Length: 157
Ligand SMILES: [Zn+2]
Image (cartoon, rainbow, N blue to C red; front, side, top):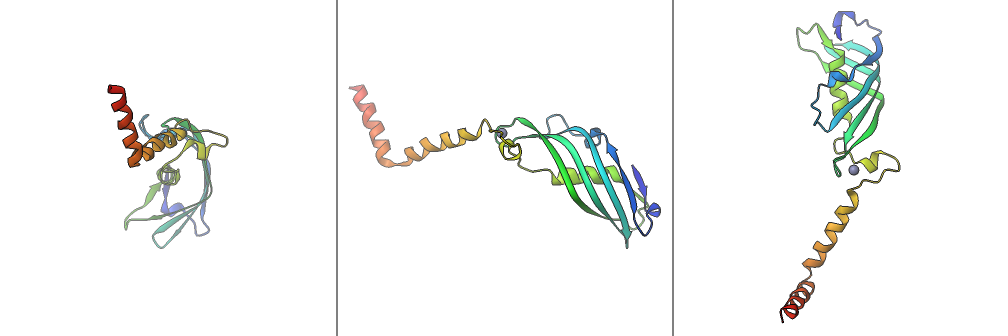
């Protein structure tokens, strides 16, 4: 969606609408899966070679939990979206969809965990971390180790 700089009046340019999830063009293995149309409401201002965007962005995604690697539903909602685009010297236009795409990818949680982002969700792998750590701590104690070897010796006899 190309916007020409010359189209932006002093009082700002308003655009709103939806964008297809295909703007993201991500591989199906990516940790971010767009799951529906993006809704945007944007005011654009141009001043001194910089275009400023203000408004709100919304979109449904599936994010991959960083702990259990399962995908979970996540609705991104940026009610106070703000972004700047520094124009090149001879730049006449820009693609609004590209700006919105980049900002979603920047602002979505980088290391999402399903149980932190979904109310009432229990991450199926969260407890493994605790269970694995415990025996390691016990093994580190020297007398624990001695006992284990002692028990093995007794078994041999
Ligand atoms: Zn999880």
